[in-house]
Image (cartoon, rainbow, N blue to C red):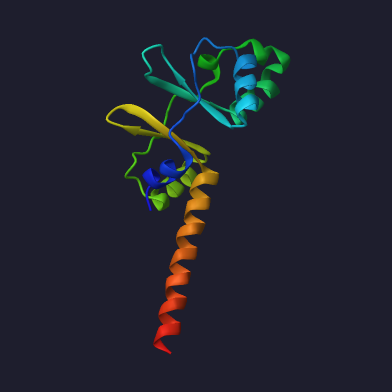
Length: 144
């Protein structure tokens, strides 16, 4: 199973913000959409970074309420790891686990085409394993 299969089910919509957006506004986007991260893009839709709930919590711990006045560009993670639609679920899980991050932008031909979370990847992996188990059960039942 690939990341493309996850996006086919989940959709390709990605919440993006500009780097000048205040953290207060980003928090409102996260809450309204019930998501854990936004991709920070310039006006030409080029990815600059990603800003997650975790980034915001760290900023709040370090700066207090002043963190809400900071911008997405100031807090975003710039060193992005990305996947392609052809990335396997196992590869995505390995990347996310090794890198200790929970959101993976999906890029094709230089364009952002989706975002998968660790929850999306784990759910897909469980579905994949259930399918394998069902296949083995059918094989054993037919062979007996």
